[in-house]
Length: 231
Image 1 (cartoon, rainbow, N blue to C red):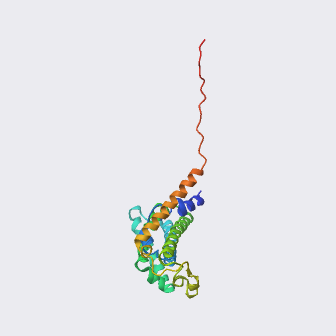
Image 2 (cartoon, rainbow, N blue to C red):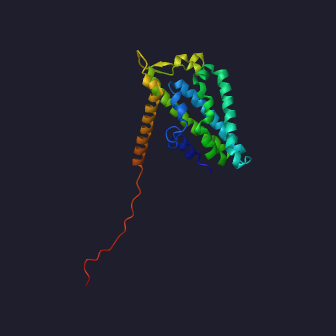
């Protein structure tokens, strides 16, 4: 029986693709200058991850083992093309903002890794749930990293939300504090590396705290009879 709780725990926290597996770092560090960009790329990756896991699970018994990787890549590339066309049609501004990193989802190690390690060995329902949890975990890290960089870099939050959600979303932009000039190191990739390192360190601290609260198994004591005098 599939343990969905364990799959969710693995995807969202324990084996998070961004914080633990450190996969897909190129788009993660490159386009997370704002929350809007991070959310857009996260949603695109989530859709491709769920779709590829479902399709790979459906065809896993019909694809010879020797050509499984090229077939998986073709499935992922087809899904990425569909997502790319949809974003070009409905969120054209965000499509232009993400640029080359949108088609590069094809080469994201998170997606091909889940297709090979999980979807090709499990049923459709489990594979879809694994893709959903891994995608949500990856998207959450993108959004948190984008929020940190946007606040530190330009003092705003949800800037450019209308690119993703339409013109009405321009009211969602929050001015956290006023900056005369942007804090460039937060907006550039070196700032992304520093923020990512801080997030990984924070996760390790939380894991250590949680582990210290777990009850420790009691050591078995062996009763020994001590003989002090022999009559």
